[in-house]
Image (cartoon, rainbow, N blue to C red; front, side):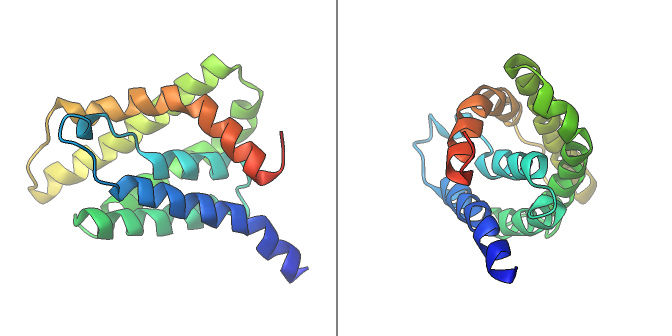
Length: 159
Protein backbone atom coordinates (compact mmCIF):
# COMPACT_ATOMS: atom_id res chain seq x y z
CA UNK A 1 0.00 0.00 0.00
CA UNK A 2 2.82 2.41 0.86
CA UNK A 3 4.60 1.64 -2.42
CA UNK A 4 1.42 2.42 -4.38
CA UNK A 5 1.13 5.77 -2.56
CA UNK A 6 4.69 6.72 -3.56
CA UNK A 7 4.02 5.89 -7.20
CA UNK A 8 0.89 8.04 -7.16
CA UNK A 9 2.77 11.01 -5.69
CA UNK A 10 5.83 10.77 -7.92
CA UNK A 11 4.23 12.59 -10.92
CA UNK A 12 2.94 15.27 -8.56
CA UNK A 13 6.36 15.91 -7.02
CA UNK A 14 8.14 15.76 -10.37
CA UNK A 15 5.73 18.22 -11.99
CA UNK A 16 6.05 20.59 -9.00
CA UNK A 17 9.85 20.49 -9.21
CA UNK A 18 9.78 21.17 -12.96
CA UNK A 19 7.36 24.05 -12.41
CA UNK A 20 9.61 25.47 -9.67
CA UNK A 21 12.55 25.27 -12.06
CA UNK A 22 10.52 27.15 -14.68
CA UNK A 23 9.72 29.80 -12.07
CA UNK A 24 13.42 30.57 -11.56
CA UNK A 25 14.57 30.11 -15.14
CA UNK A 26 16.14 33.38 -16.28
CA UNK A 27 14.25 35.18 -19.01
CA UNK A 28 15.13 38.28 -21.03
CA UNK A 29 13.87 41.50 -19.47
CA UNK A 30 11.28 41.89 -22.22
CA UNK A 31 9.72 38.48 -21.50
CA UNK A 32 9.90 38.61 -17.69
CA UNK A 33 6.49 40.34 -17.27
CA UNK A 34 4.92 37.59 -19.40
CA UNK A 35 6.10 34.75 -17.13
CA UNK A 36 3.11 32.68 -15.98
CA UNK A 37 2.90 31.24 -12.48
CA UNK A 38 3.78 27.68 -13.49
CA UNK A 39 4.00 26.30 -9.97
CA UNK A 40 0.65 27.84 -9.03
CA UNK A 41 -0.98 26.25 -12.08
CA UNK A 42 0.52 22.86 -11.24
CA UNK A 43 -0.68 23.13 -7.64
CA UNK A 44 -4.19 24.02 -8.86
CA UNK A 45 -4.14 20.99 -11.16
CA UNK A 46 -3.23 18.64 -8.31
CA UNK A 47 -5.72 20.28 -5.95
CA UNK A 48 -8.43 19.60 -8.52
CA UNK A 49 -7.37 16.15 -9.71
CA UNK A 50 -5.93 14.56 -6.57
CA UNK A 51 -6.60 16.64 -3.46
CA UNK A 52 -5.72 13.86 -1.01
CA UNK A 53 -2.32 13.13 -2.54
CA UNK A 54 -1.38 16.75 -3.13
CA UNK A 55 -3.85 19.36 -2.15
CA UNK A 56 -3.16 21.88 0.55
CA UNK A 57 0.05 20.26 1.77
CA UNK A 58 1.54 20.63 -1.69
CA UNK A 59 0.20 24.19 -1.88
CA UNK A 60 1.81 25.19 1.41
CA UNK A 61 5.20 23.59 0.70
CA UNK A 62 5.23 25.01 -2.84
CA UNK A 63 4.37 28.44 -1.47
CA UNK A 64 7.27 28.26 0.98
CA UNK A 65 9.56 27.23 -1.87
CA UNK A 66 8.40 30.26 -3.89
CA UNK A 67 8.99 32.49 -0.86
CA UNK A 68 12.56 31.24 -0.57
CA UNK A 69 13.25 31.50 -4.30
CA UNK A 70 11.82 35.01 -4.66
CA UNK A 71 13.22 36.29 -1.38
CA UNK A 72 9.98 37.79 -0.11
CA UNK A 73 8.30 37.69 3.30
CA UNK A 74 8.32 34.07 4.44
CA UNK A 75 4.80 32.74 4.15
CA UNK A 76 3.52 35.24 1.58
CA UNK A 77 3.22 32.81 -1.31
CA UNK A 78 2.38 29.98 1.08
CA UNK A 79 -0.64 31.92 2.38
CA UNK A 80 -1.84 32.91 -1.07
CA UNK A 81 -1.33 29.47 -2.58
CA UNK A 82 -2.96 27.67 0.35
CA UNK A 83 -6.02 29.96 0.26
CA UNK A 84 -6.48 29.62 -3.48
CA UNK A 85 -5.67 25.89 -3.34
CA UNK A 86 -8.43 25.46 -0.77
CA UNK A 87 -10.82 27.29 -3.07
CA UNK A 88 -9.74 25.11 -6.02
CA UNK A 89 -10.25 21.98 -3.91
CA UNK A 90 -13.69 23.20 -2.89
CA UNK A 91 -14.64 23.81 -6.54
CA UNK A 92 -12.93 20.72 -7.94
CA UNK A 93 -16.02 18.65 -8.71
CA UNK A 94 -17.56 21.56 -10.58
CA UNK A 95 -14.36 22.49 -12.42
CA UNK A 96 -13.90 18.94 -13.72
CA UNK A 97 -17.27 19.01 -15.53
CA UNK A 98 -16.92 22.58 -16.86
CA UNK A 99 -16.20 23.23 -20.50
CA UNK A 100 -12.65 24.26 -21.37
CA UNK A 101 -13.66 27.92 -21.55
CA UNK A 102 -15.35 27.79 -18.15
CA UNK A 103 -12.31 26.05 -16.68
CA UNK A 104 -10.05 28.79 -18.07
CA UNK A 105 -12.28 31.48 -16.57
CA UNK A 106 -12.30 29.72 -13.18
CA UNK A 107 -8.51 29.36 -13.24
CA UNK A 108 -8.28 33.03 -14.19
CA UNK A 109 -10.30 33.92 -11.09
CA UNK A 110 -8.15 31.68 -8.89
CA UNK A 111 -4.95 33.21 -10.30
CA UNK A 112 -6.34 36.72 -9.83
CA UNK A 113 -7.21 35.88 -6.23
CA UNK A 114 -3.67 34.57 -5.75
CA UNK A 115 -2.19 37.81 -7.12
CA UNK A 116 -4.57 39.86 -4.98
CA UNK A 117 -3.43 38.10 -1.78
CA UNK A 118 0.20 38.72 -2.76
CA UNK A 119 -0.64 42.37 -3.51
CA UNK A 120 -2.35 42.70 -0.12
CA UNK A 121 0.57 41.15 1.78
CA UNK A 122 3.00 43.39 -0.11
CA UNK A 123 1.01 46.43 0.96
CA UNK A 124 0.63 45.24 4.55
CA UNK A 125 4.36 44.62 4.94
CA UNK A 126 5.43 47.87 3.34
CA UNK A 127 6.98 46.32 0.25
CA UNK A 128 6.79 48.41 -2.89
CA UNK A 129 3.73 47.78 -4.99
CA UNK A 130 4.73 46.40 -8.36
CA UNK A 131 3.67 47.55 -11.78
CA UNK A 132 0.70 46.56 -13.86
CA UNK A 133 2.65 43.63 -15.32
CA UNK A 134 1.88 41.64 -12.15
CA UNK A 135 -1.71 41.32 -13.36
CA UNK A 136 -0.70 39.77 -16.72
CA UNK A 137 0.11 36.41 -15.09
CA UNK A 138 -3.56 35.45 -14.53
CA UNK A 139 -4.38 36.04 -18.21
CA UNK A 140 -1.40 34.04 -19.43
CA UNK A 141 -2.02 31.29 -16.88
CA UNK A 142 -5.64 30.94 -17.98
CA UNK A 143 -4.51 30.60 -21.60
CA UNK A 144 -1.95 27.95 -20.62
CA UNK A 145 -4.43 25.92 -18.56
CA UNK A 146 -5.74 23.60 -21.35
CA UNK A 147 -2.29 22.48 -22.60
CA UNK A 148 -1.07 22.12 -19.01
CA UNK A 149 -4.03 19.88 -18.12
CA UNK A 150 -3.39 17.73 -21.19
CA UNK A 151 0.31 17.41 -20.36
CA UNK A 152 -0.21 16.61 -16.68
CA UNK A 153 -3.05 14.20 -17.43
CA UNK A 154 -0.79 12.23 -19.75
CA UNK A 155 1.98 12.23 -17.12
CA UNK A 156 -0.51 11.06 -14.52
CA UNK A 157 -1.53 8.21 -16.78
CA UNK A 158 -5.02 9.44 -17.55
CA UNK A 159 -5.80 10.70 -21.04
